[in-house]
Image 1 (cartoon, rainbow, N blue to C red):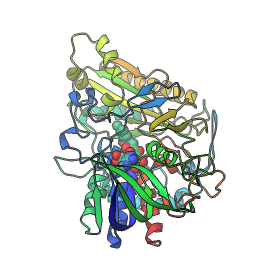
Image 2 (image 1 turned 90 degrees about the horizontal axis):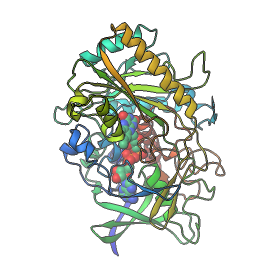
Image 3 (image 1 turned 180 degrees about the vertical axis):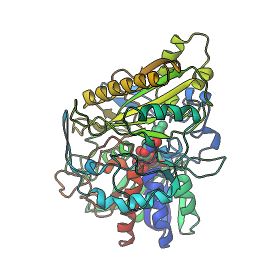
Image 4 (image 1 turned 90 degrees about the vertical axis):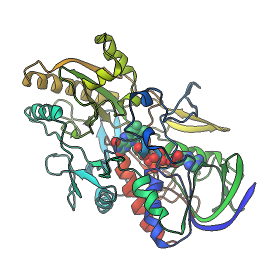
Length: 504
Ligand SMILES: Cc1cc2nc3c(=O)[nH]c(=O)nc-3n(C[C@H](O)[C@H](O)[C@H](O)COP(=O)(O)OP(=O)(O)OC[C@H]3O[C@@H](n4cnc5c(N)ncnc54)[C@H](O)[C@@H]3O)c2cc1C
């Protein structure tokens, strides 16, 4: 074991949306900050604008295996690199709706109230949108919450092929609106992520050190068990011990919970910060469906996501429960639909013999549909030695099915509006459950709240049980909402960063 002779004010574990953003927030304080990241810098060609081959080979996934509740192993959809999953995400940075912070009745139960409200997050959403250069437009979506300032950059234009489709949807009385996107405006690296907007600016400060290929394997407490004293990491096959005053986990909701559980000791026999027995529980991931229309006319296959539809977010007159959020996929040559649901291509390929993947992608118009899942204590992350188990039984599925049917109706009516000659086929994937390995929008494994009996973290995202241990990834979510999570993780990291500034 090599003992690092430095003492840090703050040690941050992980560089994704939470960790990368927090590093950026704390860097100007001049305090000594160590960032430990198990991955390395990701070569540009492997990032989210990669080609079909890269996605088909799933090169970006870790070789690690996790286990489902039946003990079957699977390859998790997670990316270990500087920037974490934001290096492969679609950069759609969407605010949760005001009501998402309240207790909301869903068809299958109640999604719990948050201890903080939209108004508490609003200033940080605004800052997050500035920091991540979000391009968007307010005013067209009735579900959009109030913004104290407009988006810092104008929304991206729809691909011409998409513009007509958007108009056909609007003709049905719906409100297709611009999807807010983080963009760097750099040609060779257009997508904004937590490496570009978090880690790179943080490293300009001499007081910040980043160690890559540094996998944290254990947190070691002091003898009273009241605080974390040291962080153990493996770097190039060697064990290192790092010491810091404040330790912040930002490993992603599954890995942070697993690390807390693996760090059990005689003072914390069920895992660190786990006196409530809630660490790892209430794991959530969205109900998700991809739809692809095969159009008669080709498109470039390489364009950004640009539109979202939230008209069914809170339900409609025939189904008075929340249904969810819809956004288009980007051009399918670059969109992660390849990564998330490769089988859709074989579905399409069967219907279109003679077409290669690339031609199919150039004829496709895709959509993603997302519905909230409800927290359930039995949906949980567990560990057995080094093995990570993810127990998950989906819920709130009927609400998602309704959204799927609504959207099929909208697309079919849209086809009619367009003269019926634009699309040849519509494919829906998956029919039924989202595979366990799709953990892109994971959250909830260390929920925050005021009561140590019913939450793992307090409202500043400090663990109730250990005085110097924080978690700033998506673990803190008490409910998942139906919008993608990254903007809320980023806004929260800025908020927790402000709290930590007063502590260090
Ligand atoms: C294909 C895909 C598309 C997506 N698209 C969108 C989108 O358009 N909009 C959106 O809002 N969200 C999207 N998401 C989700 C979004 O990327 C995540 O919600 C977000 O990145 C989570 O941030 P985080 O900080 O919680 O964790 P992560 O971004 O997962 O970061 C965790 C970091 O911790 C590191 N780490 C893990 N364990 C250890 C350890 N033991 N020691 C050291 N380091 C460790 C990891 O390497 C990683 O860098 C997408 C995700 C995927 C996979």
